[in-house]
Amino acid sequence: MKPKNRILPVFLAFTLLITETIFPCTRVVYEGLNGTIITARSMDWRGEIPANLWIFPRGIERFGEVGTSSIKWKSKYGSVITSSWDIASSDGMNEKGLVGNLLWLVESQYPAFEKNGKVKGLAVSLWLQYVLDNFSSVAETVSALEKNDFVITSSHIPGTNIFATVHLSVSDSSGDNAIFEYINGKLVIHHDRKYVTMTNSPIFEEQLAINTYWESIPGTIMLPGTNRAADRFVRASYYIDAIPKTDDTRRALASVFGVIRNCSVPLGIASETEPNISSTRWRTVADQKNLVYYFDNVLNPNVIWVEFSKIDFSEKAKVKKLSLANNENYSGNSLSYFKETKPFQFAGLD
Image (cartoon, rainbow, N blue to C red; front, side, top):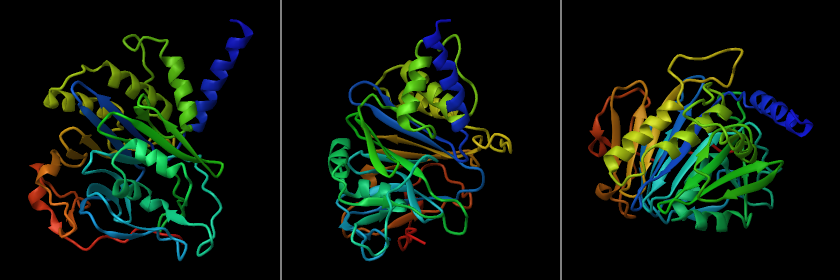
């Protein structure tokens, strides 16, 4: 082996060590034929992470939850989101087909922030919701966030000693993609329609480097099989490209569900010595062409969905919730089970 090639094995070994995050997830975007775009993600967590589905209409007045320096806005677009503990929007799609996904990134370092200070801020619990409320495309999102008119700030998840560190992926109905990360206190944006896969650690730039190595090895011969973030990134990247490109919605959805399940961790699997291995709790699949949002709770036998064409997103409409946190069992199109509910309170600074 030539000396210059010895760097790669060392690099790969190092990345495997730093990918031992406690809360792994996977996100992948499929581009089929005739405008078929589908985004899927898994939520993996060491313990229970209660999730509910919410319908938010247009016109909701929002507040950044970081004191008097919070940014304020009125939602321009309606959305369907998945909440975590009913304190944050962790996944969702708006009525324009813009999808956002929050995934854990232990390397995240947010800017220094003074509550009630001069710098405008937004609690990380609202980061995804801000995007869904205000933008119709990835390009719009990038153009707005790269101005750094405000900063994202974080704190501990209420009732825990876990400091929330996440990065944000955004995809739209045209197939465009962007990844937003706070590294060393600075917002780093990766914007390219080819960025269809994201997992947790390492930072996205290093995820791309790992995948470049594996692209030289035929996936039909060998793929990394562990539950580590780097390995899930490689498998998701390979399979999302290998499945048939089609505009048959039924077949496309089945293929994408297969990919995200391939990157999931069976319920009950955990390891004290491998903290990156956490059970998959739920999965979402967003059909951005037909505007249908699917939810798959691993403790229930049925996938449920909501069709946006049947939702009233007007300003006069009510906020609605589909309770899933207690493993309620529904099947298929579940819009009729949503109930008018007072919006949840987003978590803010301690």
